[in-house]
Amino acid sequence: MNVIKNFSHKGKETPTLHDKLFNEFFRSTIGLDRLFNQLVYTSQVNSNFPPYNIIQKDKTTLVEVALAGYSKDDLNVVVEEGILSIAASGHSEHSEDHVHVHKGIATRKFKRDFKLGEHVEVKSAEFNDGLLTVTLEENIPEEKQPKVIKVN
Image 1 (tube, rainbow, N blue to C red):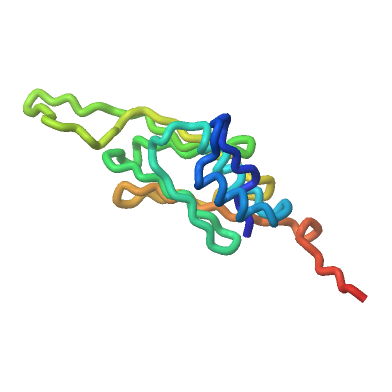
Image 2: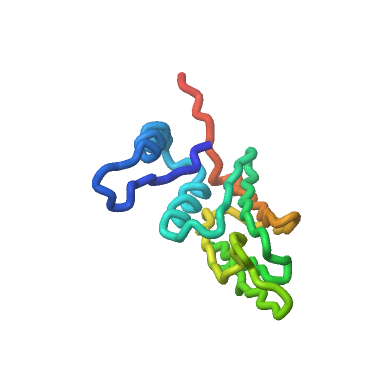
């Protein structure tokens, strides 16, 4: 399935190799599976925190977000008007009995938004071992699904 809509280089004077490869690969697709297109576009305008993966399996898409140091209670997952928002208020662990010599695990406040395609539903969200997994499913109505036209 094509899942990238427009992969532009966002105002850079010279597109990266990554941009060139994706543009070439998806040039031959027309209007298929807007979910990933919009997820990728939205992610390009945000910062790189927290890191995430987007995995597609047939009509199911998984959004995995790496959230080491956060607890399930720190997280807020909301779907509103076609936007999947994943946020955390952040917390700091100030303690009287110890000092961090090095603190490389971020637990700062963040919000990451993903624009969902027209027929995409959020089925579930699970948080295990520092990894948030949000399961999305595309349910295209029968009348909007592609039809095979027999050539005579």
